Amino acid sequence: MKMNNIRIKTLQRKIKLYYKKSSRLLPWRKKILKNQDPYKTLISEIMLQQTRVNTVLGYYKGFLKKFPDIKSLALAKEQDILLAWAGLGYYRRAINLHKTAKAIVLEYNGIIPSEKILLKKLPGIGEYTSSAIASFAYGKEELIIDTNIERFINRIFNVKIEDLSTKKTKYLGEKIFPAKNRGDFAQAIMDFSNDYCTKINPKCKVCIISKYCNYKELNPAKVLKGKKTKKFSISYFIYDVNGSFLVRRRSSKDLLGGMYEVPSSLWGLRKDLESNNLIKVKENYAPSLSKKIIKHEFSHFTLLVQIILVKKEKIKKNPFKGQWVNEKTIRKFPISSLTRKIVNYSLEEVSSLRKSL
Image (tube, rainbow, N blue to C red; front, top):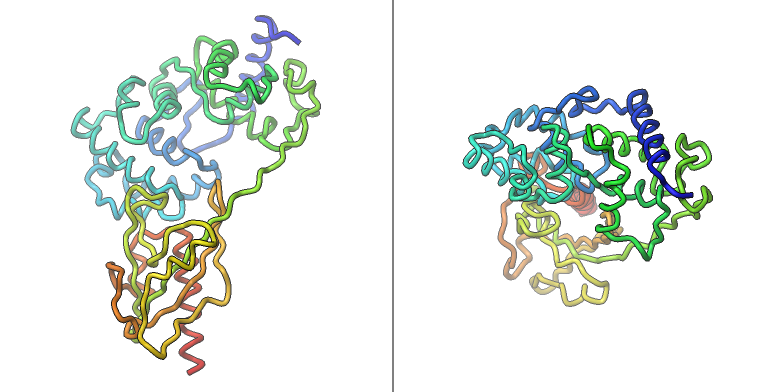
């Protein structure tokens, strides 16, 4: 089926009608054909990078309450921003967002740029995010392509996997997108993809535009999830008689950059774990191994963590630098959901060990 101009115009009309009737009510959005608030758009788009809408909804309002405008965000301490971001993942986004806020206040008098070329110069803002902010907040007619829109376009034209490319997607995107109100059209496709054109098991049989779609002749093969790779690590829960334990801040360049953690080895293959024994203890003392492995899912891999419980006074020389906290004071530090799992389980284990003595 060829996608001529008549078919494309009809498809556009149906997508617009769908959006008018069924658009999602999201706190950062405004009514159709109305520009969004630039600051709210900036925050939401950074949060939505590699993160589902439903997950972002649990953090967005609380973050705005703490940092209601670009100036308050720029003046905030990085640790406070990370604390508000804790659990959302991809923490470099929060660090870059802080840098962006500072740059906007210093270089643009606190006004978020409206031009894509200027937005792309800000930390953590790339091709899609710059297009989205310029279009959603300022009504610029940019071609906006995220993973959902890319999937939609390639299915409409039934692009073979071996032929996929950014250049081709942009070329086909220009055919699909109308000349005006591109921001609304992009959000319409995102909502439509959420309801119909899903990554796995798309609802082709009940799709309202199936007549205008070439996707494998409306008989799509099931998309099989590839197996995630597994990585392994050792976490050293070092504790003292007063109930305190050691945490340290991760490098801002790491996946969990800027967050606090229980001192851990590098994440790697299982065979590398033996060489990761980083603590030397006094004679006649055996550190306790956790009874279970902590499992944590990242988007592209699974991390399996073995916890070693070590009494502070039994260490010959502590190789880790950090801060001593307890169950209450740890709440003042930004920690990831992975670290929260490790801390909660380790505290239970230490409590059990003390009761058994």
